Image 1: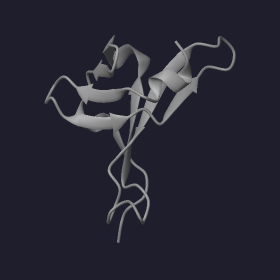
Image 2: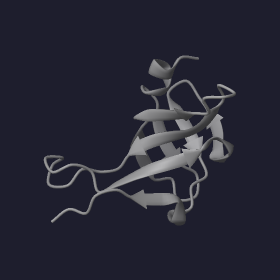
Image 3: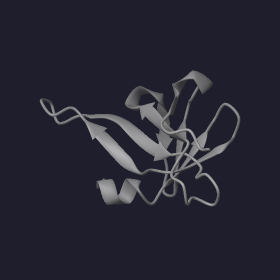
Image 4: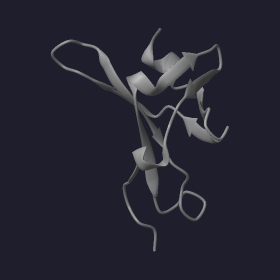
Length: 87
C-alpha cells in the first residue's frame, strides 16, 4: 500500500464512532523504515481559514483495521495533541 492510498481513507475512532478526518501525513522511523504513526489534521477554525486547532497523532499500534475506504483506530482523548489555539 502506498502513502497516497492512505491519504484517501477516512479515519474513524471505534470508541465513540467519531469521524476524525482523512490521513494527512505518516510518521516513519528513519532507521528501520517502519511506520510509527498516522497524523490526521483536526477540524479547522472558522471554516478552516485560521489553521487547525488540533491534530490526531495515532500510533501504529492503535490502528485496528485498514479497509478499502476507512481506517478503524482506537484513540483515547489524551492522545489528541493541541497544535494552535484559535482566537
